Figure 1: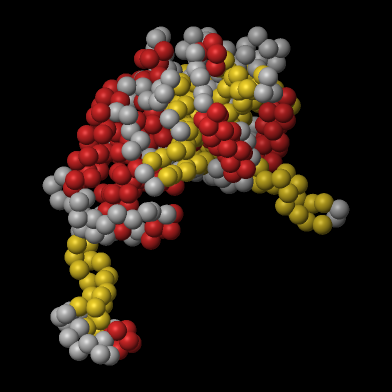
Figure 2 (figure 1 turned 135 degrees about the vertical axis):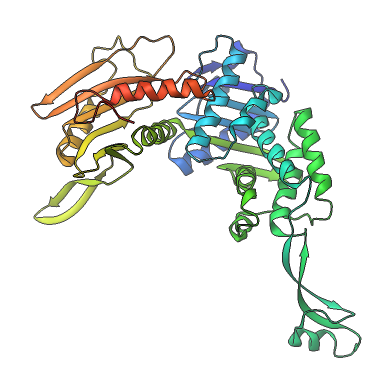
Length: 444
C-alpha cells in the first residue's frame, strides 16, 4: 500500500480492513495530528476517525473535498460531481469538475485547454495540482526566465552603485582597495524565481508521476542560476506583481498552495503533511452565484452575492443593537427600482426524498421565513444539488400569504468542462429561477 492514493467520496465511510488499507502507526499519528490542527483552524473535522480496540478502523469524509497527504499516503476526497459509472472514470470526471468549479469561482486559474491534459496524471488530485503548476511554469520560463532588478550590497574591489559610508568605514578602515557598496543588478536571482525553485525542489521529492517528475526536472535545470532558500509566508507577501510579471500570478498562487497550504509540514527535502481542501457548502454557493450572474448579465435584473445584509435583532432591552447578521447567498434585484424580487439560498446536501419533510430541515424553513420578513421578499428558492440517478422532485411551501418557498434541485453531474453541458446547466437554472415571480421569463 505504500504511496497508494486512497479515494474517499464525500460523506462515505470506509472500513480500512474491507478496503485492504493498512496504515503504519506514524501515518495514523500524522492523520490524527492533521485532523486536530484542522479542527482548531476551521472549527470542524475534515475527517471522522473511528476506532475499535484502540486501533483506527474506519475513516469517513465530511463536507470537505480535495487532498490530504500524510507521510507516504494520499487521501483524496471526491465530490459527487460525475455521471460516469466506473470508479476510475468517475474520479477523473469528478476531479475535472472540481477543478473547473475552483477556476470558475476564481480560487485557482486554469485554462480550459489544460483540463484536457489531465489524463496524464490519471485520477490523482494531488498529482493534478503538480501537473498544473509544472506545465504552466515551464510554458512561462522555457524561452526566457524572468529577470528584474534586485537590490544587492557587498564589499567589492571596484566601485559600483553607491558607497554605504558607515559600513565602508567599518569594513575598510585598514584596507583601502575595497568599497562597501549598494547597487542594483538585473538578474534571474530574484524572490519570485526563488519561490518557484523552492516549490519545485519540494515537489520533485514528492511527486510519483513520471510525467510530472520530468517537467519539474526541466524547471529545476532552468533555475540553476537562482539561489536556493527556504520560503515562508512573508516571502509571498513581499512579491510585487506588475504588468511585466502578472502572467506568473496563477503559478504563484499554486506555489502558495503547496508551500503555505491550509496544513503543511515539511522536512528540508520533502512534504510530509499537505492538505488542499474546500468546503463544498461554500464552493457550491459560490459556483451557483457566478453562473447566476452570467444568466442575468445585461438584463433587467442584477445579481448580488453575499450582501447586502441585515440583522435579525435590532433592539435589545430598550437599546438599539445589531445582532445575528443575516446574509442570503444570492439576491436578484430589479435594476429599475432596486426591489429584491428573489432570494436563492443554496444548501449542499443530497436530499432524501423519502423523508416526511421532503429532505428539508425545519431550521432551514425558519431561516427562509426570517429572510422573507427582514428583506421584504416574497419569493425564495432553496436550491440543492441532485444526483444523476435522482428524479426531479419539486416542492412548494406557502408559509403565509406573502411568503413562498420553492425547493428545487439542480443536476451538477455533468461534464462541466464541456461548453454544451454548461449551457444545459444554465438553462436548467433559468427554468428554476422563473417560478411565477416578478422576474421576466425571457431572462438573458
